[in-house]
Amino acid sequence: MKRASVIKGILIIVAVCTLFAGCSGNKKNNAVAAQFEETAFEPTAGTIASANDSMLTLRIAVSETYCKLTACSCIHDLAAREYEELQDTLKSKYNIDLQISYFIEEYELNDSLLARKFDGVICKPWLAFMLTPDNDIKYKRVADLLDPSGNQWLTGKIIVKQDSPSKDMKDIDGKTLVAGQPDSYEKYHAPFAMLEKEGIEPGEIINKASCTECINTLSDNLADVAIISDYALTASCAVDFAKPEDFRVIAETEKMPLCSVILDMAKVSEADALRLQNALLEISGENAPKGLLNKGFVLPAKWAPVPFLKDKK
Image (cartoon, rainbow, N blue to C red):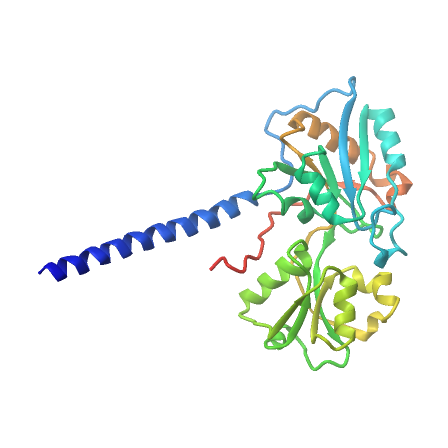
């Protein structure tokens, strides 16, 4: 009888522990999900942009693909974007002083953002939003910046060599895959989520920091499949040592914004964010400064990142 009581007590303890463990796991996953709600700036109903009669000073970090002062060497042929004319126009017409600091190294940008040195940043959105779960940073995207071809979007592309027998995603099963790192949404989170959804398991995964390294690894036959940013094959990072026609695309990820103007809403009021958004849109299109390489800014596309978490199960 005593033994039965002991066993019953143990079972109750196990059940309670299991319940709390499940709640804790769900709580953790819910907390992660809550951090990545809609990232586009949507002002509260009735919000009015602040007036242009006073100077609005915004300290902005810039680390983006097509900027001449921040682009990696792998796309030097396309990276000619300049911000000086934009800064002059915003200051003279709208009393908005964008004080820009440029970052070539992403780790330096991350350190500065974590130190809250800036009111905002112009970059690939994931570079900023990946910092928010552990740091309670209230970022919102007030505008998206078009690339030189007028494109708002970015995808990850899964490629193989032209002579590879692989035809589609299911052929990745058991193969060696070279991909990006967790600081890349299009080369890591989006494609690995796709693979998981399809039940595809690569045999080995190699993580590299850049598209150039991924393409090199594939070219050197150290991997069967590579994941790269969609612009990589047409940029010099490919054509310097390999031709785009040497590869085939067997799958592509969902679309995500390529580059955004992101503000820290703990530092910038909705009225000021709306004022900046209105100004950026007004001087875009046919009125865009030539240094922006195309038609400038558009309203931020809807986007709520869903990071791939290896331990989420």
